[in-house]
Amino acid sequence: MRSVVITGAGSGIGAATTVRLDAAGWRVFACVHGEGAEVLDQQTSERVTVLHLDVTEANSIKTVAAQVDLALGGGGLHALVDNAGTAAPGPLETLPIDSLRHQLEVNVVGQVAVTQRFLPLLRRAESSRIVLVGSIGGRVATGFAGAYHASKYALEAIADAWRQELLPDGIQVAIIEPGPLATPIWSKAAHKLDSLPPSTIYDQRLETLRKVLRRRGKESPSPEEAVELILHAVDADRPHTRYANGLTATMLPKVRRLIPDRLFDRMALRTTGLGAP
Image 1 (tube, rainbow, N blue to C red):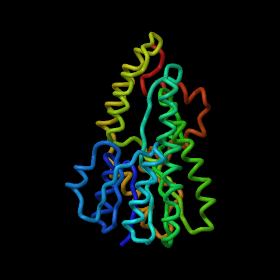
Image 2: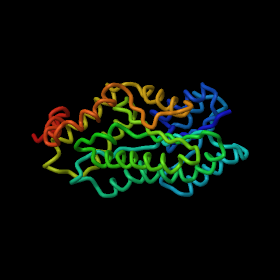
Image 3: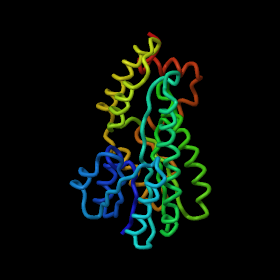
Image 4: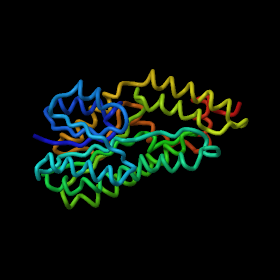
């Protein structure tokens, strides 16, 4: 039975991927932080083991890796899906530095720390793979999400570097670059805006941003679009190095390269309604 570790499995893409891989007969180690364990227990079979993981805590990562190692009985791990992530929205001018630090700690440092710990288990399996869940936000950046974009751009570089470094070991690395999807990350991001320091410069635009975030959470496509990409990445004999869902996520990075920066800036602000009042 093939085995996979999925981080950030408590909701959204991670939870949907857990359910699909369980149904496909995989042994799934679903790592959650906070809520989600009870729902997964109700929706999945005995092939799924729910573990509590904080990707920012070294001891938590070490403990979970030891639990997976013990459960595999010396066998190899076939796939690791680095899906855990968060979003810290807001203007960089007023964003607390601790929020930026936490953003990078979860989305970048945590991904690397988890992968480092599981690499010995991945090396035991033949043709194992690492799947990093990035974003179209790692290819195209817009205002008021600078911290999030910084983390996803960094993940692109990490995917490229690790793909080259692990090629001689037969471990394949892919990154998923989905566009906006209907997951709880949007409502959580909107809620985080409340903790930003008050600012007469940005207050009106932040109110608009709240509306944008809530709308995307409701109107975006289902997480299943990203799940299909992850399934191919973990299951295909020769997975792609990059996966994007839909025309927008596929074409926008290509079109962005053709548009002058200042023109794109004006287009982005006009499209989102986040231009100066």
